[in-house]
Length: 638
Image (cartoon, rainbow, N blue to C red; front, side, top):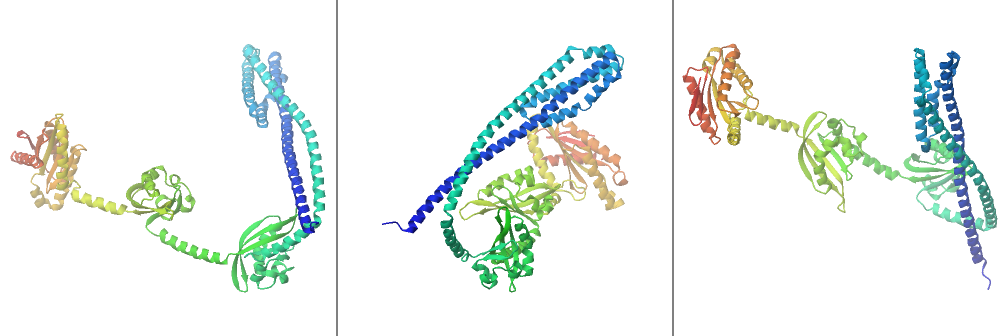
């Protein structure tokens, strides 16, 4: 039996298509080879043209140097100014010529020799200029000797050699390029003949397939029409004048008409003047050959619809005959985006006005969100630093402070800590929380951070601590702080005693202080106490503790004494300072009791009692002085 026509058609078509593909592949290979050879040939032509420019530049440069040397020698030998002018003309542009030569010959292989040429030229120009100065200064013999010296001639000989090597190298390269161009020309002719043969084969195959391909095209168009009518997008084709030439069924559904009634109408007639005006700029661009993609809002029968549209030019022979348009209805997506945007705006308004610092950091430790507190605390625009690494945003020091806690959070652990940082020159104490953002599969996507400024609370706590441990009138430590400090000092003395060191406790009060209050008033009495506190601070070392423990009673703890007698020297200094300062503008004296010790195992209360006994001893001795007792019982008076 003879095969039916349809199987025969399929077989012949399959063979024809196979041959066509082979021909096209061969043509593509040949075209690629030709293109590659054309690029190489173009590069060679450019290089040859470049070399033809460089060679004359080198020749002119060498001529300038020879003219300069000849002109100089002629001037020195004949004393004629006319010989000097060619020298000056040659030297005027020689540095510029060197720059041009280096710019026009960027070949790395010539760089070292060009650098040596520049160096030799500068040596030669320096030598030439020096000979002229020597000659003009009346030192003709020295000038002539410099010109005729072996060194100058050596520089010129080396310059000729280097320039000659460069010229020879360039000429050899130019000759090689010329030879290569001739060889490539013959090869290209053969490839062109092969390409023409492939083109002829393609023409024959295309001709034999016209009829069968026409029928196949009709069937394909029918299938494509079926596909286009059943996709949920608007597909149209417009000619160069904007008239509709094709529209799928979705177009008719949106505009509530049949597609047949729309064919032949312009965009203004299909969608209305107002809608057409919105897309007109994109139509102009696509008709210039540019593919465009955009979102547009269209009003159809009073209903506002949003479309995502893409226009693609319909090119034929390099000319735009029209364009294809694909439009997707994104009205529902726009509605959802608007709801999300409104929600984000509300959330941003809330977070930007909270007195806390909120951020989101991704797993790569890059900043992905920050509220407006970033601007207030760090002086940074949140939008300008989005996506940057944390080190670049906050600086290495602040990043290092939080590196360990951030690593814990990125490993999936919730972290809460307090930290202090200097931000824009201001010390801030922050209560910080890191909360990991964990995906459903357990992967940590990033970290939410929240920092609360607790500086005011910390300052209040510090102020309360200072108030609890200091005297409100004088600012000195109070009895509570003194008791704690004395215990610490005695502990240190136990170590210091092993080296033979001593420690002293001064216990002093104001002589006849009640009389001062009764005579001058409590305001003057308070002034006296404040100024005596100042005298005490100035009379002891910065490391010594001075405290007011009650009324007009003060103490001073002297640590690190080499011998007990040093405490008496400090007491004498205090007595004299109080007497000389006349606190409150009146004559005031003080009495001081001194308790000194070398042993470190003295109970604090017994040391205070010893100093108190010494104070009363100073009082009995007539006041305005001091008395000293050393543990366990030696005393020293004044």
